[in-house]
Length: 148
Image (cartoon, rainbow, N blue to C red; front, side, top):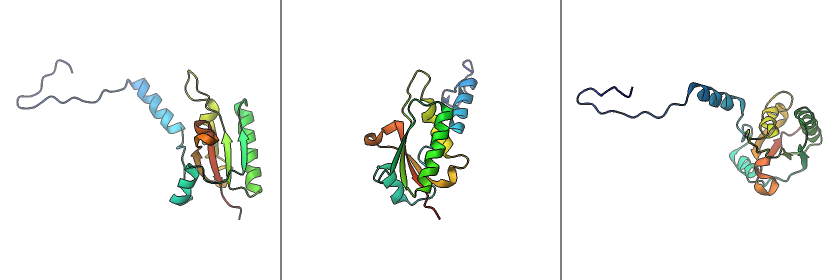
């Protein structure tokens, strides 16, 4: 393409730089695997804003630091189930940042995915990243549905 000249009377246009195919596939795969962190499908805008700002009272906390993926997944499922049964509305799940040379931590990227799957999804109304006073990027607010 570098040796091509535009037709007479036309200007050359510059196109945005293209990612190599391998990098483009990795970026697409990463976007498909990671769900949106802020999910407010079942609540109104005002409640969504209150959750994002950390204004809901946190009724329980779960700290997943130091756990393996299997342990963390089991603990998360038990915690959400117990909190739902107890009638709690807003809980805090602390994953930790896990920043390293390979990117974000395993639990930080896996927990939002787990919350969107299986038996946990019907119990969850909304998910949002926590405010710095509650753990910031290393924690999530989870708003649970009311028991019917």
